[in-house]
Amino acid sequence: MPSTTTTPAPIRFGPVPQHVLVTGGTGFIGRLLVQQLLRDGHQVTVWTRDVAAASRHLGTGVRCVARLQDVAQQQPCDVVINLAGARILGLPWTDARRAQLLASREGLTNRLVDWMAGLARRPWLLVSASAVGYYGVQAPGDDTALAEDAPPQPIFMSQLCQRWEQAALRAAPLGVEVVRLRLGVVLGRGGALPQLLLPISLGLGGPLAGGRQWFSWVHVEDLLRAIAHTWTLARQAHDAGQPPATPVYNVTAPGTVRQAEFSRIAARLMHRPSLFPTPGLPLRLLLGEQADLLRKGQRVVPAALLRSGFAFRFADAQAALADLR
Image (cartoon, rainbow, N blue to C red; front, side, top):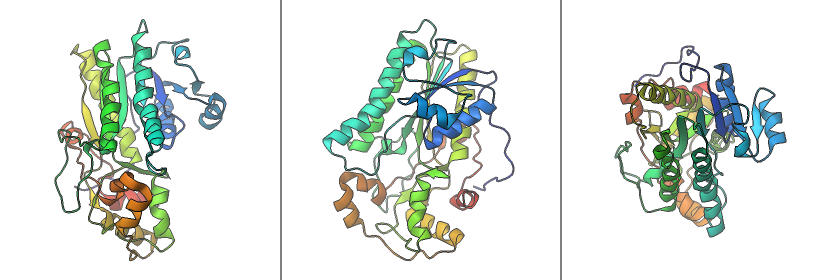
């Protein structure tokens, strides 16, 4: 599928200004989302543990609160966008680390829904992040395309995403539209990409654990556009008086690539070699179960987004990486 890299139209989040609560607003994705919401004329509140630091990062146009009870103090909240969650990769998945990951996703989302339940006027929409880890992992050589109806697996990453989504779905009986977004690796000038490109920039890039595993990714601009698109779809259903729905969308570019090909594209754009293989066994010994996310991967396709008429601006890795150089 060809990519369109012409100047994009401004991102529009629904037809009317709204009061939006964002969690994870100081992260790589959250900061960009907050900027786009402000540009589109929305009032933004960020729920954060460190109000002073968040205010410094986000500026005076954003209201930062440490307590959910303070969110609707001045104006009822219309939309909640839930991006919060502790970093998945890095520290070993000890019992304590797994508990922390669950608390930062399932636990925080449960707190949001409990807060909504106690409001006299509830938000009409909850957009809640999830991840393609919902589908578990695929062995190298398994080329099955995983659409939104693909089943989960009995491994921790999948179970974490399942519990995260189930917590968000508790808002539906409250009359809230719940949109779940299963994100691939988000590529931008921040987040995971600088770490992915570091070995290549040092001339040490190459196939990881053989390189045959699928790599599901999305350009951060397309992610922001997907949030706006699914918000608009939910608004249309809401205004039509339809019962609250709970759609789920894979937010991954159509141009899924194998890890070795992604490395080759990046290396070519950076004028570096991509010849140095990294065996999978040391990763497994170092990272344990989480190494399977790197060694195996998933071939996730955005079937529901494409059916809904969404057009990716960066549909292939060549265009995405060239834009982010």
